[in-house]
Image (cartoon, rainbow, N blue to C red):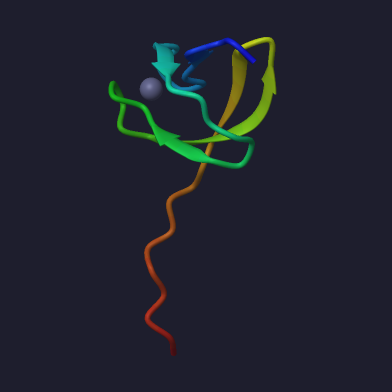
Amino acid sequence: MSSATLTGACPECETELTVPPVVQGETLSCPECMLTLRVEDIADGLLTLEMVEVQLRDWGQ
Ligand SMILES: [Zn+2]
């Protein structure tokens, strides 16, 4: 429990991201392509990131 930061690569632009500790299921945004990424898995300080399709809020029908 000593890792201060986690790293992962953006699946879209392959920018390497260094982030403070997050938990699985949390979302981040890539500073390069502004995509929203969800933490799918964390292993040995390495994040598996998946892009999240940003859905505009549905105002109801
Ligand atoms: Zn990116």
